[in-house]
Length: 450
Image (cartoon, rainbow, N blue to C red; front, side, top):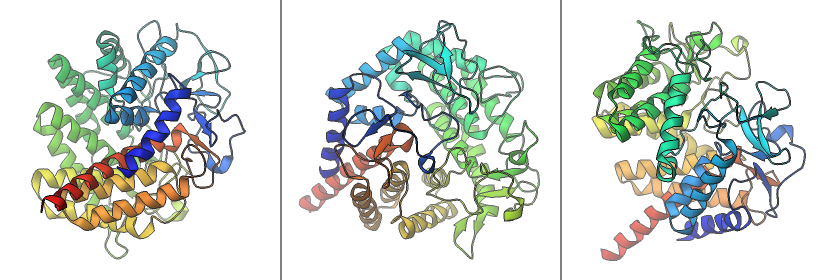
């Protein structure tokens, strides 16, 4: 259990020094990192990385790891959730977290920001209108286990406040009930939350809402290409282009299908992914385009690139900035899920092509979550097709990641950093290491039995 032991070492330090919420950035000596943020390691725009505070939202993968380990580690995650509620629960039941709120340690309060301005103090009377969840789906099982009443109130509030129209299914990434940016990634998460709560409560209205949110976005597919506008509600570049964010959305819809058994979620996901790979796969270079026009499926020329928030010409597994609306690993995940359902060769082919790109390129400096997602992709393919080579590839990437991210009592968030931030995604790397260790352990036992 080589990788599991390494994960436990990391968590032992955290749970012994930080009983609840974690600081947003920790140095290699295990102390809170209070240095200036280096621009070259600025992982996210604005203050999403929660300078001087804690970001429970971006720590979600780490607490999921704690639950995977169970026992004292799960208790650590439970304690963190209770501390989060004690500090970041608004009077109206909203969680003050996500991409515009975080808890500031020195100010001893929640702070809020809209753009690049310094965060300002936020009282508990705050209504949560800047609530935004993307790109991570929260671990709702932790919330439900610890406080069902608070969790249900929060989820119903957010679903209400993110809706612009319950009739049409129009939503906003922010919880202000106004027309705004209806990003696919946001809509997928909202639909998945509604389906998750439907399964817990049996409330048919939640299932109906999830379907309306989904069909709202799907209604902006191009009749000729089948490509879906990345953000249909604002007239800027992402209304006229589709990106691999389509796959991020599709993964959420496939989770909706798994939760509810409603086949329309599956069919929409399959349609969306099929259209993207039809136009988005470059056969000559064996890569996926990062951004294609919805009207004709053609990739943009570099001179057409309007902003750094657009993906590169080719989708990259190593993209290091949020948001660029680029989710190549999600495309691989969606393809593997779809192949498991329908066994259509094209989906397995694309997943393997992405894996081949990852295999050829992984020996480079990137953030921890990219290594983690690469490991998980190889593990997913191994489980899907039982080809031993993918397990070997996963181990190669894991060993390389641990080598370049080691350097102190905790793993670094990037090979060149002297700290680890929540937004670096070490929790996602740890998830991959645990999944890999379990598969290797099973493989070893299988060999012994033979």
